Length: 282
Image 1 (tube, rainbow, N blue to C red):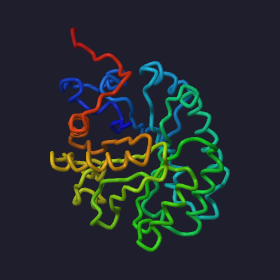
Image 2 (tube, helix red, strand yellow; image 1 turned 60 degrees about the vertical axis):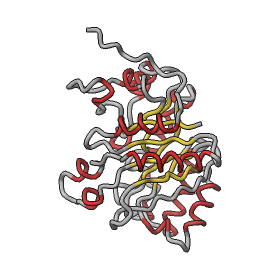
Image 3 (cartoon, rainbow, N blue to C red; image 1 turned 180 degrees about the horizontal axis):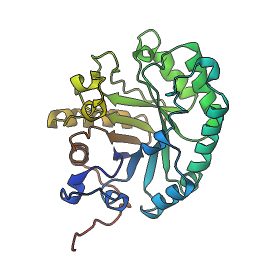
């Protein structure tokens, strides 16, 4: 199975004929069967918020939730503080929050997107083990943003370790030539789910560290040739996993939705259980 989605649902005007407003989750669910939610990175959503999401989508719709920034060590704590009381509380609250999605089979995975300074060293290797222990049997995907995990000397061991922990390695397309970029490694570590996240190839924007880096980093529109190449890659990954989920994050210029729908055409796939498309009669 191949599924395709976008990061967030609100900022994709091409889905609503470029109306000057936010896309609703219900409208989004008429096009895609999965969405990646990043608000959970900044603050753990309330249970009532999660329940409202569920009321807005068909029963087969699924969510990818970003792990909270405390859980991914974006607070910059030292290794001996990785499992301090604040971190343990965040993990506990996060597990409670996703429970309704788990019960309804609407949680596809929890995305642990680690910061660039999370490198391949003993404390961080141990933390991955701790995450699995603390998160129980919840589905987890790991995105590294430090090239040390892909060093030829350790890459194979990295992938075997993720497989042992029952974690999906997130393959990413991003500028690998810049210091804070990583290569596209399509190794599948989970036979249930493989994840491919597409950030674009805006090397200049990716390297930028100014106040507008979020707006420039993902300013990129994939070409037809690139999308054809991704289609071939996805089919190869599909041979090793029951599901390959592709998430388009190249949306600074609102290109993600159109790129995603084009890849769907190239792969010649359809999605069951989508919500009804809005007719725009009023």
